[in-house]
Length: 222
Image 1 (tube, rainbow, N blue to C red):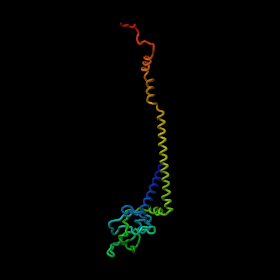
Image 2: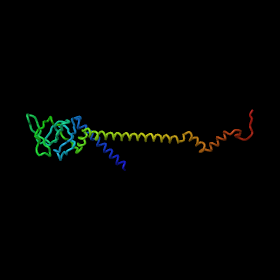
Image 3: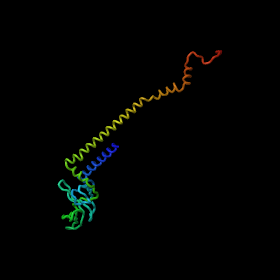
Image 4: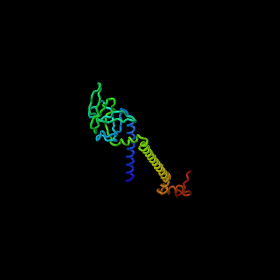
């Protein structure tokens, strides 16, 4: 029972580490189609999007009022903003968006141009962003990514070594059993000697020298 519980915890730990690593990659580099995963560091969109959440962002053909969008620059010193479109206006012949956080009392003062929008929020993962944000620091990367990865690799190597030992043990056991078996020709000889006495007696009679096969006078033909 404890072994099953330990195995479940291990696989859960493995899944969490893999998820953090993937989200770390997606939050650092855009993938095909400009899909991004970004960490929400403020509580301006609570309760819809809680602080420390991860948002998956995908570019859309058009944006309308009510859509939650992420906009701004992504860099080491700047974090993009995730707010809801409150209004759409035209400035200088171009479409601009007025945004507002759900937890804020007033809209944002600065409007957002279409070129600044990274995409529309299509998925929210609560609280996972804390681990991803920590993993971006040197100490966090060591504790959250490197150390668990070393533990996982060690466990997998140990499991492989145990399986190899079991395999060779089974082969050795099989060879020992084969040595203990009586060969086919020896088994046939044993059957001939002990299971068929009448044939053995007949063979002895034929092979016995100096005994005539039949009694009576010998006939001589001219």
